[in-house]
Image 1: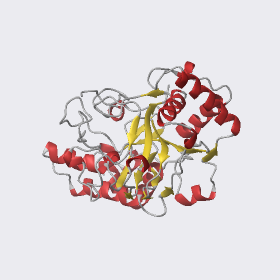
Image 2 (image 1 turned 90 degrees about the vertical axis):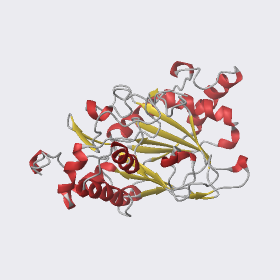
Image 3 (image 1 turned 120 degrees about the vertical axis):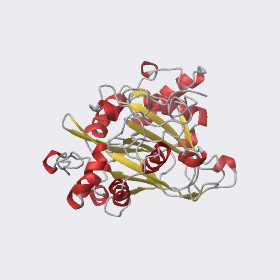
Length: 349
């Protein structure tokens, strides 16, 4: 520890927070599933159709244009739960077959405006992303990053990772023919486990890594300017940023081989996050809206088999949202994409 500049008494304490949960905790307490009431659904419907009938599309309107008189305060308290409570929620009950895809996009964007500031997800500057296999099952065995393809555009297994926003929201329009479960783990519970089992591996995780930005930087081939800590302790809060593949590709691109300890640390993180004790498996139903705090959870996805017909294929709508006056973040941790604190992906294309 001394060699790495960390003494055991200097590493962050165990995470004592509702966000440090195990899979059993969440299986026993399903209060994270929130069933939208008839009144909630009616408010969403009225707000959506009002804008859609006027020909106003997502990106063209803001929160004040999408009135949710009784649902908005519920969303505000839900945000507090996501930000400082268990770190995630699943909204259920929306009947997607009542809406066209354009209408669903308006509805989802409208909901997003009540969550916070919606930020860019890719180099095209997309604010409302579509998660679907654009590669026709090509990357089942992985290797998509090396080809410059983002994982959400494939049907491959996605290893545990966090996205570059405070919250990621996914709305299920159509599930896959088979597989494609959404898996989430508490990155704070993973921290506690590593601290108990192998506290010597926390030093490399706290020191951080140069990430390969896989096309999400200001230029096509770029590393993060600074070392992003996997775990950041700031103003009494522990936050996590993790993507093992981008760490490994970053080391390769920088020509700095990961040390045995660094490799062991990121391997152990992934192993714990995917273990039965920590992995919460969710099977999306059409209309489900999953909201995750990227600083306290990591998410992954099972490989899936899709339908042949394009109109039946798995489709999720995705938002990256920053929460106003959100969780305090250390500057070297908050600049994930070389765009400053909490910045989105630079639009280049």
